[in-house]
Every structure is written in structure tokens, then in C-alpha cells.
Figure 1 (cartoon, helix red, strand yellow):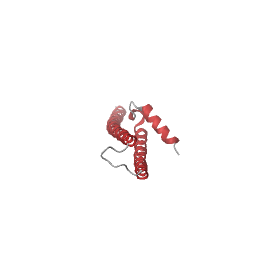
Figure 2 (figure 1 turned 90 degrees about the vertical axis):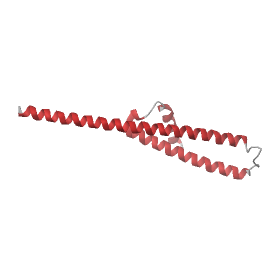
Figure 3 (figure 1 turned 60 degrees about the horizontal axis):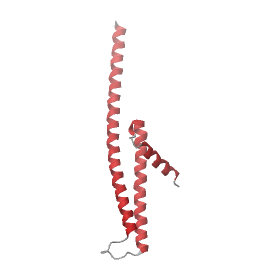
Figure 4 (figure 1 turned 180 degrees about the vertical axis):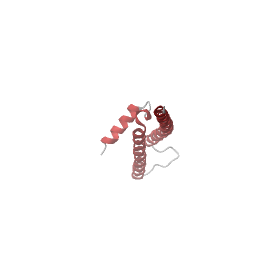
Amino acid sequence: PQQLAERYADLAASHSEALRQREEREWHNARLRQENARLRLENRRLRRENRCLFRQALLGPGPDKPPADPGEEAEALRAQLGRLQEKHRRALRHLRRCRAAGGPEASGAEDGELDELLLEEDEQP
């Protein structure tokens, strides 16, 4: 009876620990899903901003704006491109860390797109 009682106590403790770990994983996964959703929104915003900037660059200045110096405009676009590329790199690094921390369940339905972006980034010098 003493051994059974000890064994039962061990099983109860193991069960409690397993439940605690499960709750912790679920909490962590929920946090990763929230972060993923936030990053998707940021990605959409950056894509819209990027399209708008390229559209502006292609169309040139409006009728109410004087034509800009091509050298200055090119330099401004280069600087802006550099900032956008750095934001993109940081977002990819963050996604990579989230994916590593959360395992396969942390990556969403856009796995193919993320894999493609990560592969592109790895191939760049």
C-alpha cells in the first residue's frame, strides 16, 4: 500500500507537470500567433507603402510639384530603398526566430511564401 501511494503521488505530480507544460506551450503559441498576425499587418502596410512609392517614382512629380533634380531624387530613392531593405531583413530575422522558437505550429498558412523569402535572403550576398 505504501508503494502504491507513492506511485500514485508520482503519477499525479507527473500529470500536473505535463498539464503545466501544455498550458505554457499553448500560451507561447498564442503569443506567437499574435506576433505573426501583427507582422502580417506590418508586411501588408509595407507592401502598400512600397507600391505607392514605386508608383510615385514611375509617375514622377505631380503637376503642382516642380521637377526634382534627378540626382537628388535617385539618392532619396536609394536611401529609402535601403531603409525598406533593412526593415525587410529585420522582419525576416524575427520570423525566423519565431519559427525556431515555436516549431512547425508557429508558422502559418503562408509557409511557402515565408520559405521563399527566407531562401531569397539567404542567397543574397
